[in-house]
Image 1 (cartoon, one colour):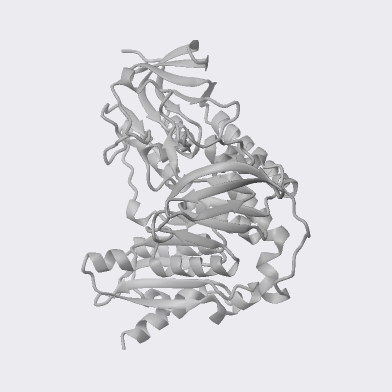
Image 2 (cartoon, helix red, strand yellow; image 1 turned 60 degrees about the vertical axis):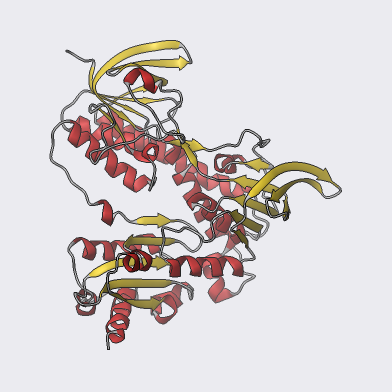
Length: 466
């Protein structure tokens, strides 16, 4: 059968964009369908790029990075407003949209604006409004990269200002003095630390008993300590019963009632209990597919769904739901779809968590190794021991190496502190080549740099061996 396109990618976020461009570079006829008027998906428009830019604006305007040197009262700007933060965010979003559009154009990827709806396993209807077709297309291969949307509870009266989801942060009209964050996942913890750095009194609630359970516990313990230092109240092991707005003599506020009977009152509440796959409008049944209760699609090792010619990549397939991993999944799916050999090592995908301070990790944690009965040793370096740490004013940063007790092979790298998401790639390269702790001992790093932490941590680890 002759199809209109060799590949149709649904969604223009990192996964869909990378899949479309990879297929185009293989000489395939490619269409990218995006329901919004602008490309980039959640990543560029409401998620990764805006939140990280907002974080950078907060770090700059609050003077947080320099407070270790100039004191706790230091700030670049007093009375920071949401307009101050939105200014920088809008600039970066515009630039990233333009870059993405240009990449698609120069690779001759046809972009169609509208909602993609399956009418058959190989057929799609593109609608400008539900039920009204703009165009019908067929494709030999289809990649679903629709991403996710913030999960909402139908019983909560969201208004975007007092009771909001993460997408609403970009349209906040004023900075609240107090904030309750419900959900201590990556997004919740990131925003909790961002607002706390601005001096907002934050309460973070989660029914789990620890932060970010997939991260090495020593790192999350350090994060929790630093959050306490910025007056963040952690209510872990607590479940929310109700969220309700109310007015009193102090103005418009929100009351969060916990199952335990506790009540938390604040000017605003951020509901961040996870995200749901954006698949409800795809009419998956027409393609012979079905999503789970959270809208996610099941896949095999090659990102194929139950229909071998239909792939799913990015946040719509669940954890780890990172832009970096989504890009790689899109590339690998497109290569597999057209029989091109390509490989990656998911075990070496790094995680970057843009809290304040930021966290990055690659490889295995102490908890995982203990559970698997693998003997290991650790080596640590504190930023305060490193000249560069003193220069930049970060005295609380930590780099931790985990290596095999007998083999000395590097098994994991875990970092909290300034530049963690950049610094982790040195350890990632050594992990990829199955290098040992001795590599860092025998390597000369520029001075003064944070990279020296690797050498200091390696010596610390070797000293622990006795």
